[in-house]
Image (cartoon, rainbow, N blue to C red; front, side):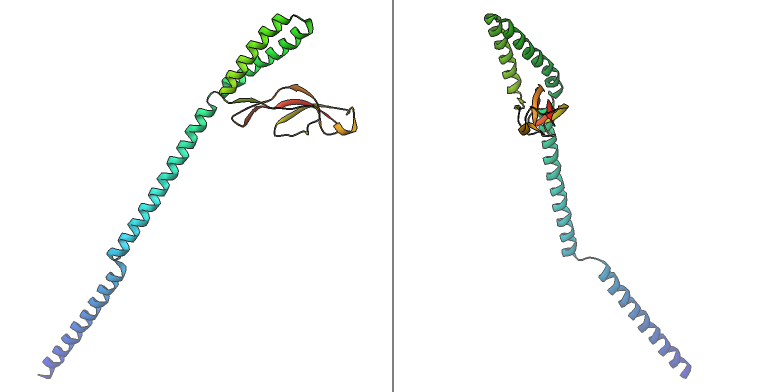
Length: 179
């Protein structure tokens, strides 16, 4: 009978150990499994991040689209600069000869073309002799001895007019600087 008692006590001990292990396993599972509030917070955070990422995407693509439309005609504008240069040379030559009617006709066409290109965002870079040389807007073709001390390091002569398209330089002003 004592053997039965020992076996019975052993069974009870084993059951208690199994029961304790099951409790530990259940507690571990509960600790591993997030609560509904934690899941909701995670999903809300994921949603907010995804929404912010989408808003950034929309802003970026909108900006890219605007830049594309702004500069889509840049190649055309650059090719038209040669025509403007030809008009400027023609005006200089006609003014030397003194034929006033021809000069007015060419100036009229030149101004009309310049105004139409200006409506599309083309602007002439204003540069005069004596201005400071700025590498962001000017391209030095050559350097000459400055005719006076105040022209050292400054622009002496403008060779070719520079232009911007919507505040972006598409052709630098070609200048001669004094040294």
